[in-house]
Image (cartoon, rainbow, N blue to C red; front, side, top):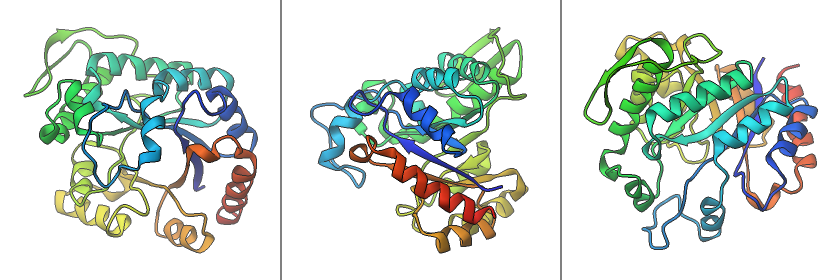
Length: 281
């Protein structure tokens, strides 16, 4: 079955997170992702991700893991994902503990989406050099996975370094929730194959065919392509495009809901449900 879900920017200006989660589950969809961003510096450089109307939502998002924990308490079926957790802005030991806790609260329904972030000044406010953000993401992801899978755990790298420690509980899912990278540069397929379980490319931002490129990266690295899950982020509401991706092995579609549409989800979810039924018939 191909999974269908949505991603929203969870702020105090849209319906409560728990209400959104209950609605998504009642409509028969499969996944709910929350974006995250800790803050927006008043002065920050612009790049391809910047849109003036997005500054306020990015500055006032709820903490994604906390919000997802509330959603886990009022749902029983849908998968709950970070879309995405910015590891450049998070301590790896605390993050490993938080995601493991969320995985227990949800009884194993967590997808751990990760990335580096795009606001240079915000990343640097957390003590992470912007130019080294992907090296930081890699080490923190590896450290988090080690904390989930071994005890005692130790890790020694350039950005994460700790002597043997005990951290419990381990996640509900054996080995920990799947780690998916949410990013769109040409370097991402190699990163996914190196240290992740899946990829969430954004449909209109990735310049290439993600399914072709991830397979090529697997072949180059000697990794089995069946080990990698691809969820198309920012999926178009176009049945023909979705059918093509599904036929070629895409495991699911995540539809991005702009903040201005988050208050009127019912018709959007109904449309997505029709697409889900058509693809999975």
